[in-house]
Length: 270
Image (cartoon, one colour):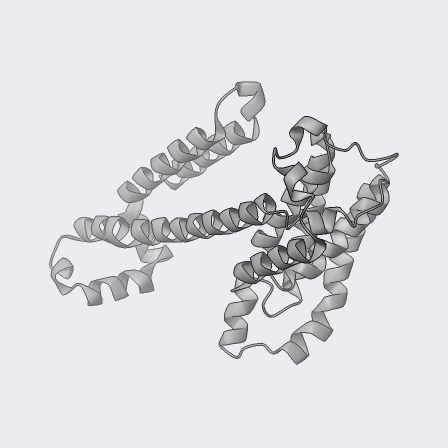
């Protein structure tokens, strides 16, 4: 059964990777693949659980003594359905709720001109300089925000600065790399480091000096590689791609835009 599960996973992964040639929606493929894998895992649970989740299974039976009197196959089925599936759905729900909240906040900042405070100050139209600037902004912003929120904010900024969608792909990939690198050296830059910091496993005085240089290298090397393939000037978005309220937003004072940006970022942090 394990071999069948691996085969199903590989087929599903290939269908997702080849979405455009196959003309199959990757979201539907992912949901179907996940459902099939959970069903197969439920049938294979009596063979897999004793080796893969023995300790967790024991804790489950201790918590629900009535289930311990059932046949072993039924115990495994209940463990998968009532514990592992629910835990998995809970983790996915946490991510989705976080994304919804973060994206709403980012959209509100954008709708009220907060990002214009940044875009109005980016004067360069050279692709290489802009890529370097975006990478460093993302790197240090991710040390305060988490990498996922930083990626959302910076991708929104790129929509304001870049008109060519292929250029946005390049800048987006660098944003993801820089956000992950920036979140690694700060105790509050990533969910994992936050958990370690709260538990007292790491401290700011030891984490930052030891990790900031490796994090910088992991960001700078890909950026330098990407810069070799970028030439010329940035293609700005066409006029019709801007928000309809942009004319009104341009009348906002700089202090008002800055206030909106700061308030939005503080909401994302806390």
